[in-house]
Length: 380
Image (cartoon, rainbow, N blue to C red; front, side, top):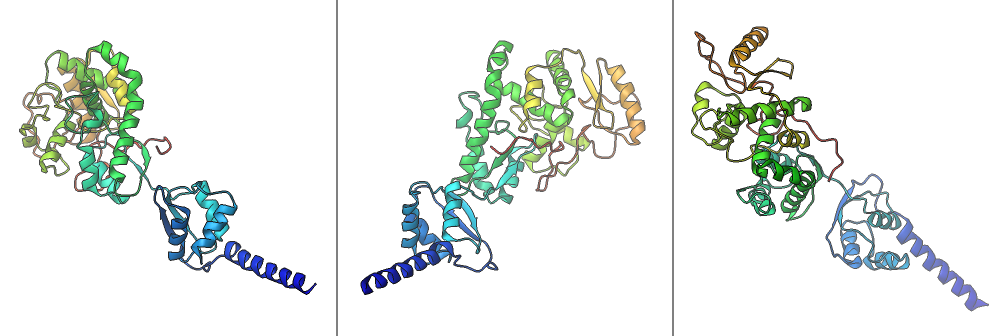
């Protein structure tokens, strides 16, 4: 009888100790949350030791035994977690099994270029240099665009989870290229029938993206540029000049008259045809517009000062609209695509702005020429 009583007492002590170790929080509720990063392939005992270092478990072996007793071995998920002082070991295991990781997301607005993207991811902890290094490797898109020198235009603008670790930039860039492929692949048959290369389409789409924030206008804007190309007229579009100036590090937030003479193949006032490649990452609507443009014969458009544009087929008609909307605005502005100044008109002494553009809220010294239009898609 005495042995039975001692056994029961011992069992009660062991159970109490087990209960205390597994069901009772180690830290106080007032303690700050603790970050836990589990690397892929980490073993249960490795995780237990990390938890011990954070003061969240007393004994790694007890953690391992509890995981084993629950049949959860091999089910603890890698990732970054935030664990609070009120959590018991059981609750910690529940969280790791669910994969309830901390999410770091970044949204790339449509019309963002590589430099702006690098600044956005830097805020989320991904080094700019690492992102730009990955984005300047054209290998992921070479099968679709053999002429690509980098991934400008091919990193689809969307909302993404930002990975952690030394390869975070490469993983993020790869995911963005996959999203671009998801969007463009259904259009490849139409692209082949149209006789244009993917590079030409994405380049046009990037210009359309930066010229108008209104999706319904984009097919017509695309038609304007295609009509001008067909007639061998210069595109004369300000976003390409801004891109050239930014590449040269000379953009001050405005386009000045002298900037229209900048010696860059991206300057569509000085050089005919499309620029050498995309100037930003276009969204789905702009890609669709470049692939399926309007059938209009328009050659010009000018801002109505409300975000929309007035389109014209002739220069005379265009100049009438320019004069009307400039009077309404109360200041001289450059119409886009560029047209010769009206006879007798004095050149503007101030900066020239592309119509319908607004500074983009992207950190950095130079803002993109288009207002951000973040995707409503869930993170990729």
